[in-house]
Length: 111
Image 1 (cartoon, one colour):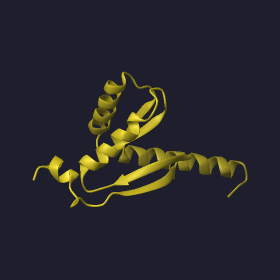
Image 2 (cartoon, helix red, strand yellow):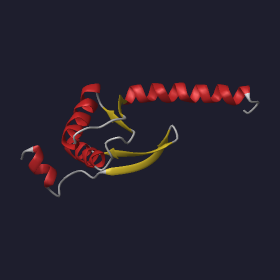
Image 3 (tube, one colour):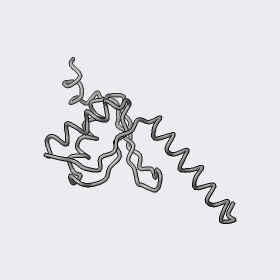
């Protein structure tokens, strides 16, 4: 059975969706063992964004995130403010943001 045929079938592993807050932004994490399902959901979500809406696309590799953004932007005609990161890059930014926030709180006398 091809991946696309199997993707339409009832035998697919479940999709787990979690809404989390990352860096003050509400985020939706989609977890599935099938990449076609994850990419399809991400693609649908991006298609519903405006061309100038600021979004963050997290991909397994820079190329994967760029490819998804390019394909959707091409269909929409354009896209501005679509940032792309890998999970390790996001984790690093999160760590920097957290340490900066902690430093500011300490400077203001908060613990």
